Amino acid sequence: MNDQQIEGKTDQVTGKVKQGVGNLTGDTKTKAEGKNQEAEGKIRQGAGDMKDKAGEAANRLGDAKNRVGDALSGDDKDR
Image 1: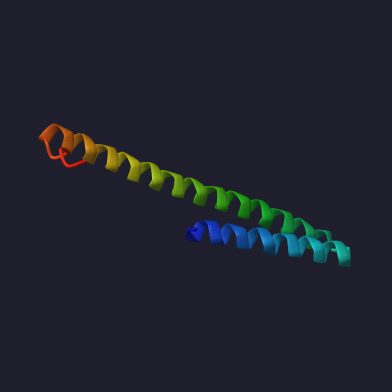
Image 2: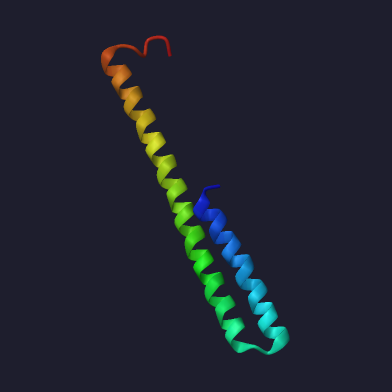
């Protein structure tokens, strides 16, 4: 889990708490702030998810590149 995912999850939880406080106290501003913070957290977590996926794809691409290079140079005979 990367920093963006952690921050996103934290914002989501904090936003839900604020919404709950807003509901209990009747404070519509706090409730709205909570909804906004939860939404921002979902976006941040999604960006973190995409960052992880991009890293995984880059690793797979690098591995494939190495295998092709080994095959072309004849270094893959031990595999």
